[in-house]
Image (cartoon, rainbow, N blue to C red; front, side, top):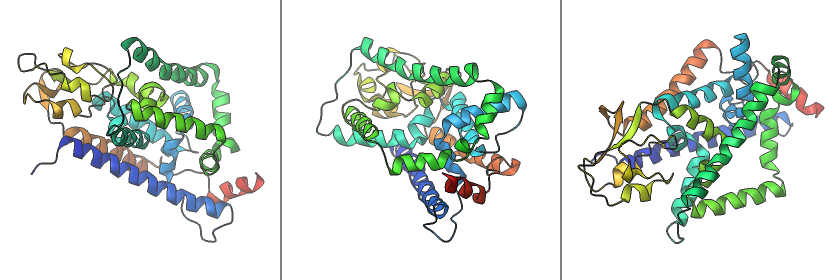
Length: 322
C-alpha cells in the first residue's frame, strides 16, 4: 500500500522537527558546560545556526564581496543558502516540509480546526497582510545590503556579540519576556483560525524564499477539461490560493504541499508539472527537500565550511566575561 502524499509530507516535517529538538537538546548541554553547570563538555551542534538567519545574511554579503566564507557561523550560511536555493526548484517547499515553526503552526491549526471555524478573509485584506512580511524583509535587506558597509558587516561578524548569538538566542528562550509571550500567544490564537498566520503574513524568511520561488519550473497544473469545479482544491489550500480558477498555480506562495492534488475528486484534473510539460510525481517533493539539505551538509563538511572556527574555550571565556 502506497503512502499518501500528506503522510509523506508529515513524516518529513516530523523528521526535521525531531532533528531540531535533538539539536536544541545538544546545544543546551553545551550551554550548561559553558556556564559551569556541567563538568563534561557536550559538543556544540553546528545546525543550531539555522536559527541565526541575520548572521547568515551578513555572512552572505561578506562572501559575495570578499570570497571568504564566514568562519564564525558557517553552518548558518550553508543552511540559508540551501533553504533559499531549494526554492529555485521546489518553490516554497522549505516552508511546507522543512521549517519546524511552520510545522508547529500547522499542527495548531489542524487540531483547532476540528472544533473552531476557519473564516475566509476578504481578498483585499489577505493581500494587504501578505505585504507585511515583505516590508520586514526589505528592512533587513536594506539595512544589510544597503546601509551597512563591508567593514561594518565584517566588524559585526567577528564581534563577541555575534560569536555568542546562539547563546544569546537560547537565553532569550529560556527566560522569555512578557512581551514575547503575549506576541506568541496572539500568533497561536490567530493560527487557530487562519492557517499558518505567521508564515503567510509575517515571516521574512518565508518572504525571501517566496521571492526566489518565481524561478521554479515546478507548479500545480489544472486541466479544465477534467475539472469538476467543486472548489475542494481551493478550500484545502493553506495559503488560500484559488487553485480552481487557474490552469497553472504560479503563485509564489505555493508550498507544493499537495493538499489540493490529494483532495481532488477528479483523478486527472490536478498534477505537478515541470515547465508545463513533464508530469512530476508528488513524492519527489519531500525526497528532493531531504536530498537538498543532505547534499548541503555533505558539501559543507567536505569543504570545511560547517564547523565554526571559534573554539569552545573562547566561547566559554566570552560567556564568563558577560
